[in-house]
Length: 482
Image 1 (tube, rainbow, N blue to C red):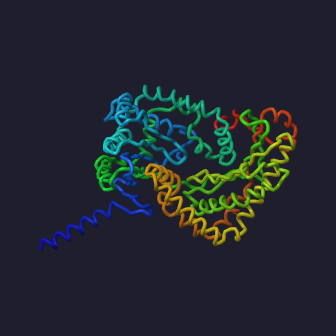
Image 2 (image 1 turned 90 degrees about the horizontal axis):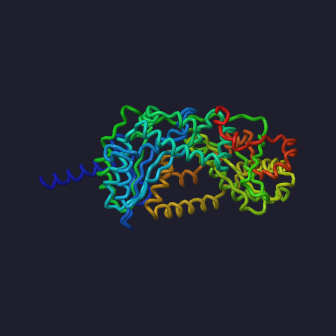
Image 3 (image 1 turned 180 degrees about the vertical axis):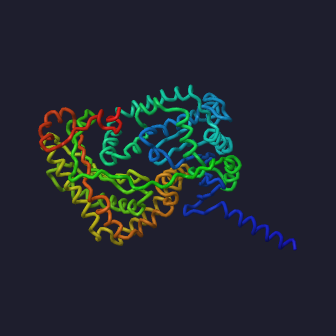
């Protein structure tokens, strides 16, 4: 009788365990789900007595409006100025020093707001309590907000003189005029100046909730013990009747009857070079996951096939293949596909060469999409081996695995990290050919960066060829409303 009872007890605990623990395709990586919707990933690796902890939220720029652009980043700063566990920012700093740290790390992007640090594994419980207090009981008051505004405005002022940031915002404004602020995580200074405690609390209440969050713990830790700690510390965290934000719908893309050409005069590029970006709107994970997979395939093929097609056009004056770059920036929304070239001798017909670059890029994309011979068995065998090796390397260091998984969890679909290799290797060729109609039938944005002195010498040529001028002042979306 006792033996039967023990067997039933073992079966009971096995069933209970299976309810909250889910094996993953990555060795020693476990997934759990708390009753309040909080997702927990634990990567077990006892190589060193350290543990990485991160809490991430599937929110950020994609949930901004014109009026709230920048406030998610401001909220990131506000969460560590005191809470029920640590009454003020000095106490927060003392707690970090007790972990052997001088600060925590946090980021705000289009898809994610996250906070993380790596501490001795013996301090895991206190580390989790640190994050819980910061997220669930942070103190918001007007004086603290006014002080934090100064810090954030100082950061924005630095962003606003960085060339790459301004070019990025310029392209966003031209591609996605009705949602360009979703790409501006810093936001305009005016929004920060006008921010209120009430606005920040509303954002926190709607987006910083357990069913829109995940915890990542990696290192010298046992998964079951980690789950028990998290459940004890975060289990009572309430969603307050709120649901995780709905998926994004496809954004409206600007329609042009011909490619749009721009020149960006700047001292941020050498006088001997011209940098040209050809940019198209791309698919987002929330509304076209297959399109995202397909455009990654296109990037692979353009890297090996399209690069050569561009370089062999000697009139373009691209020194070698390393002066060409492609980037499929796939996010949950407002994605883009971009080909960038660097050419020499910018005083030699820069406007006409820019137009030729766009034509060659368009042709290279079309050939990469329609040529099924490029997607043969050898290619997919290589792809399979590449992903197998890549995932082994990712799993070698627990903190790297957790950080990478967090990015995928927030920026795509929560489980795509695990299924991506298989889905890429089994993607029907038809999904790739459909990219042409979905995204590449639309005319691109083309921006060439030249040194200011080069522009002054070739200004008439650019004007004659119909190029519009972008500057640091008119690049961002908010330049037209301030």
